[in-house]
Image (tube, rainbow over all chains, first blue to last red; front, top):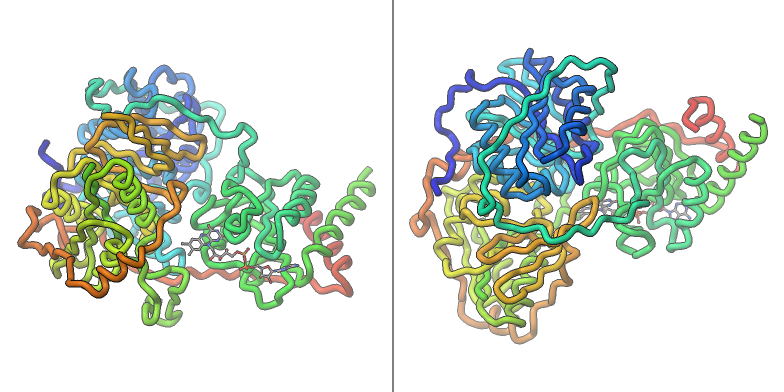
Length: 346
Length: 263
Ligand SMILES: Cc1cc2nc3c(=O)[nH]c(=O)nc-3n(C[C@H](O)[C@H](O)[C@H](O)COP(=O)(O)OP(=O)(O)OC[C@H]3O[C@@H](n4cnc5c(N)ncnc54)[C@H](O)[C@@H]3O)c2cc1C
């Protein structure tokens, strides 16, 4: 096979529109798709281009059509029986064919474990650069190119990356960071079906089974309120205290890596650089110092509350409200105060 | 089973500090380590060799100091180590790095499996493994949690956020490892003795040794470039809640949250 090359003096003017590569799992649209549409719309408006959502799969047209309600100009549904289940080969080949044929200017992919698998494969097939796990995107007002910003060195440094000579400009975008597109009742966009050239032998890795994660899986990304615990809890029992407050507030429970590494709580609860990125309305950090890698996953929360007994803990620099004190006194007192409020309301 | 493992030497980002004025990394005194996920990749290769026989070759692209990482890999049990180094490789992005590594893998040759770590802690891109797999025209399985050889086939448990995929693939194939895959071994005493006291066993490949298109490598060949870098600013108007005791502070906080209709 002849591999693709970059820097082939492509005519940049031939490339149009902002594409977002939607993700579906088990026939359900993954929430990152709606975040990509929100961000894609922002960028497209700045350069006066269309937003096109591309979703691959089989037998999921009704589900795919739902994306019209998020204000895309068009959906291209890549449909093929061999795309019923995700495969790196199948999804990369099909998506690359479409990109090479239609020439989008910008392509956004969700930086999930699937997007980060297939994204680089697509970029390598079509011959363009790819910027991983972006947390902020913008358009350069000078020349309309996309500015892709991402953390490096564990969040110690931010880097803005460009892809000046190759098209499309491609990024994977960190889930949970971008503003979701809002729902509209009467959408105007259209849906087109694209049938890729795919053969059984193209798919070299076979899916034999799927182990579906626990249904009650923690959903940190969609939580309105998160109460997180760190090393300051001093033990697994501390999460019982944290959970009491969380239950009272209808919140999810989060954790720092130190708490996870200590074995007090499962990794799915971890917030931060190597955990989940969240942006809830309220984030309550209990016994968490505020290391840069933790902040990388929660600093976009609307209100940050810190409870820590060390007045110099860095978390106090980025919180909206802080309490300097022992969390084992503060949390029960908060629960008590909330109970009083509820009584009062009735 | 012959296995090639790609490892990267990285600064321990835990200890990286930033010069707030210049926005640059202070690398002085920061120890270099084998990238954690790559260590899991190496461990898996060594364990497969222990079980099924064969040879483990380790490749690292980087400056001459990256030899240290290769020495450690040899001391852990790798049979062969190759440093891929040349000024022309400097400034490579993931595209260019994958191009160079693919050429180095081809040059080593005779492999059944190629392993990478999922991602490196300095760049966190997770792109080099898949891009290299594409350039080698090989299938890939990323985020590997468990790998079992079953005759001709390999059965892999691949992580996703919504549950694992059990996959079947025939070599040759590229795998990327995550930390759940295994617990990396320490270098053996004998390994340390042989590597650090014995003759230098590390091979060096430079641009001349590799079949690469020079328009696809280094700073010039990289499709992506750094436009600017900066230190993240995170500051809010923090209010520390005062009070006579923790109970009073907690009550004040709850009042504030209620007033904001947050709870
Ligand atoms: C590559 C890399 C990736 C990482 N990714 C992540 C990540 O995704 N998420 C993450 O969280 N971390 C991550 N880390 C780790 C991070 O650097 C910190 O080590 C970690 O966040 C610290 O967790 P902590 O705040 O719970 O613990 P500590 O830093 O030990 O802080 C504990 C805090 O609890 C306070 N405390 C103690 N007792 C009490 C009490 N009784 N009442 C109130 N406060 C108390 C202390 O004052 C202290 O501030 C990563 C590190 C690296 C190198």
